[in-house]
Each structure stands twice: as structure tokens, then as C-alpha cells.
Image (cartoon, rainbow, N blue to C red; front, side, top):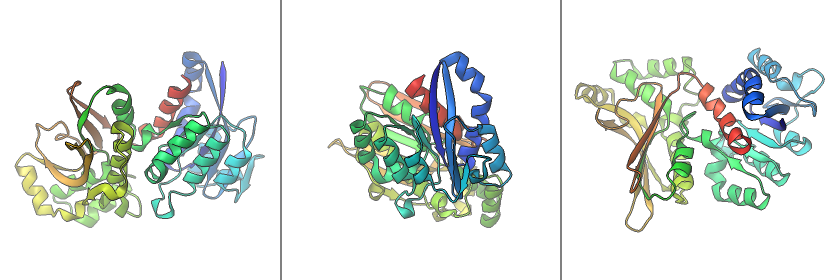
Amino acid sequence: MQTIRYILVGLGNLGRRFCVVIAEKDALLRERYGLELVLVGAADSRGAAYDANGLDPARVAGIKQAGGSVGAYPGAGRAGWDALSLVEAAEADVLLEASPVNLAQGAEPALSCIRMAMQKGMHVVTPNKGPLVVAYRELHELAKANGVQLRFDGTVAGGLPAINLGARDLRGAVVRRIEAVPNLVTGYVMDMLADGVPWNEALERARAEGVLEADASWDLDGWDAAAKLVILANAVVGFPATLDDVARAGIATVDAGTLVAARQQGRRYRLLARAERQPDGGYTLSVTPTPLPPEHPLGRLGRKQMGVVYTTDIYGVITAIIDEPDPIPSAMSMLRDLLDIYG
């Protein structure tokens, strides 16, 4: 039995659900993989907790479900203790960084937490897009310099292993084109608009379903899809893209009448992220609302589905789609990455 001590930063939709499921998976992980996962530290925006002997993930999830802070964890919590201080003080093997994306503040505090963890010799697993968009090359160089691994399969399309599929399983190929619908809520909203639901009502329904944040611009203006495309370009085809390289348009540029007309023609609008290989070996990147015909591999995506299509020179055209009715698959991408390191 191998004991893996980990810190979890971020206890929102993903972190809290991870705690619930990981408690349920304990016996399977021991029996199938010979792994004992021990949560030694956890942090949210209001405090943190640390116990070298282990915290109870189910109890952490219960505190969060009740609206509290892990800083109130009995005997181990400390109100106001920030995530970076926890990472600096704690002894652990892995950091799971699941805090909210914060590109407006340079992906902080997640970026500093990841740097600190790797400098201390910890592996890092993160579904947080921000640090990878801001400092993709730097973080990979830092991981190499410190002999640790950086895994981030959950940063693109939730629980869909889009990065693993492209970076691992397409080795040896030239990827001529990447097409992805990596953002769930934009398709959800456009489908409702095509059904005749007014814009504001569609947004409120999406919020009620938990798929749209209070600040909707990150999703609706195409920033989320663009960030995911940047990560795909770097990870899968080695193209050093940044957000500035993405020609971007959000879904507000498409009026309801256009969506209805497309539906009548058998087409379905999705916010399509696309990387197209150029003769010089570079790629042009775009995110734009696109009417997809039913014969397109992504043309029949449902309201809570995401997908990716890789067009290659030697492996044909490969499509992967996920149906994600709740955030559990996104949360458990961290377990997949953990098992990729240790399993």
C-alpha cells in the first residue's frame, strides 16, 4: 500500500464534489491500485485546515455543503489562513489546485500556489485553466527542474480526456485540425434561444442549473473557450499560443432569429474552438459561434455535452464526446490525473 498525502486548494463546485466522491472511492483505490490517498490540507477563500495525520474528506465536504469554511474544521482549521501559506507550511506529495479561474488577477493565487508546491517537490494536478494560460511554458520548465509532474487534463471540456487523447494517443501524428466545443453553457443558452426562450430567461435558467457563473461574460464572450483552445494548442500540437492569438467572438453576436433559422435547416449552433494547421507549421486559432450540420461530428451535441475532434495525417479523424449533467466528471478529472502519476 502506497500512501499519497495531498493538499486540496479550492472547495467550490469541483473541490467539494471531489471530497465527496474520493471518500466513497477509498476502498476501490486501495484494492485496485494499492493507494491510500490522505487529505492533509485544504483551503478555501476564508480559511484553511492542516493535519499531518489526515483530514476527513467527507467532513470537509459537509462543512462546505452547510455554507461554512474549512477554516472551522475542528482541531485543524484556522480562519483567515490563505492557500499559499498552507502550501508553504504543509508536508505533502501532491497539490490539487481547484480554485476559481482568475485571469484578471494574473491567475492568482493559484499560480503562486503551484509554483510553491513544485519548488517544494510536490506534483501538481489542476483543472484550473488560469495558470496554464498565463504561464504554460514556465510551469512545465519548473516541473522539469524540480523533478515533479504537472497534470491538467481537467482544464479542457470538463471530464472529457481531451488533452490526454490528443497529447498521448496521437503521438507520431501531424494534427491538421482541432475542433472543439469545450464550453457547455454557451450551447445550452443558444439551444434555449432557438426554442424561443428570451435571452435573460435563458441566462437565469443556466444559472439555476449551476452551469453559468454570476459573471457570465467569461463564458458568453468566448473567453473560456479561447483559454481552453490555448491549452490544447500548447499541449497537443506544441504551438506556443496565448489568448492574443485567438480570434474570438461570443454568442451575443448571434440573434435569436438566426438560431431559429439554423434549427429549421437542421443545423445547431455551437461556440466552436478551432486550430487549423498552416503550411509553415503554425496554427490559426479561432473561437466563433458556428452552425454545425448534423453530419459534423459535433453537430448533434446535446445541451450538456462537450466534444473534441482531431483530424490527423495517420490516425484518421477521432472524435470524443462527454455528457456531463453535473460537475462530478470535471471534479474527478483530478483523480484521473492522480492515477496517471501513481496508478
